[in-house]
Image 1: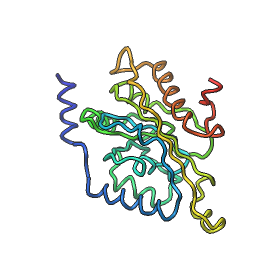
Image 2: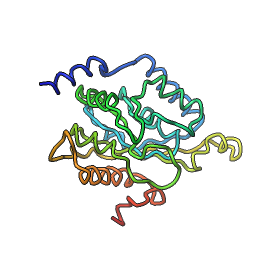
Image 3: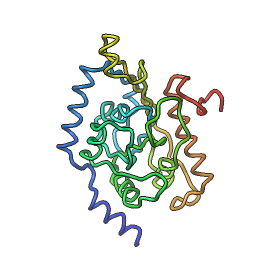
Length: 236
């Protein structure tokens, strides 16, 4: 009963969807700038379910790929992201603050963001999380436990998404030096899960590792081989 009351309290605090007007303006702006600055192709839209709950997971090689779920779907999305963005340009720090991303600080428990995320999914909402945490170019890295923890606790279906570019995410350099728009590709995979835990309230370390590996492998299948790293399905 106490757990149910807590969920209801967070549902009242974080009703889904939130901030529809502001987020709608952001979506329109992203679509506009994507159309004039990039050649952005989205594949697999037929895999997007008609209703939630849904946990969207994706790779995180650039600050630009964080907008891929917004540009690729029509869902009123919630994001859970890193509290610290030391290498992010000012515009990318402005974005999560205005969007009101649910922020977590890596290495420390943030129960507000976790309970808010569970409340979003309890309302059949759609939550986006990048399992790798910080944006670092190159092959996929080992997942932090956040995405696996959320998947195991809530049992939400998972939609994998892989995004990559043809010139190392050099948006303006591609325009000024190569005299063309940057090509970006987003591939949307098929929904998988729900992932199961023997104790959903407190998944074990082994379950978190296994679930994290499964999530990253599903993302890897949507990326070119050079970006898959240790999660290349052909080598697992």
